[in-house]
Length: 109
Ligand code: 2BA
Image (cartoon, rainbow, N blue to C red):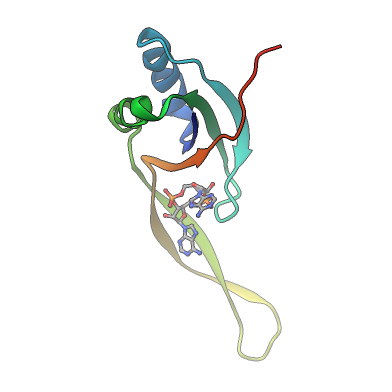
């Protein structure tokens, strides 16, 4: 048994979970926040047999899209009197960040 943890853009999670469910996979959505952008994203938990991990990853890949995002930046003034705005930086977020971890024990009680 494996646990697929996938950090996904909020706008894609619905399509991903609908398509996982259609293929018979159970999933749980957690509201999470990225440490860099401090923006909301979602983390999907999918418990699955090892031989189905690739199918789950393929579904996540198909329905998660990458996006370019501009983040405002501030630069400290040389004199140390504060900050002035500088050119925003563009980062590419997603499609999805995926971790696959071993599950020692899985039970529904
Ligand atoms: P955030 O941490 O908010 O990062 C959003 C995007 O900002 C990242 O997209 C990446 O393009 C950029 N970024 C992140 N850290 C950076 C840094 N130190 N310098 C420059 N750019 C940086 P993704 O790589 O697609 O990541 C999307 C979200 O996935 C992340 O949101 C975070 O919530 C999660 N994530 C990514 N890598 C992770 C990891 N190794 N461990 C845990 N969570 C991770």
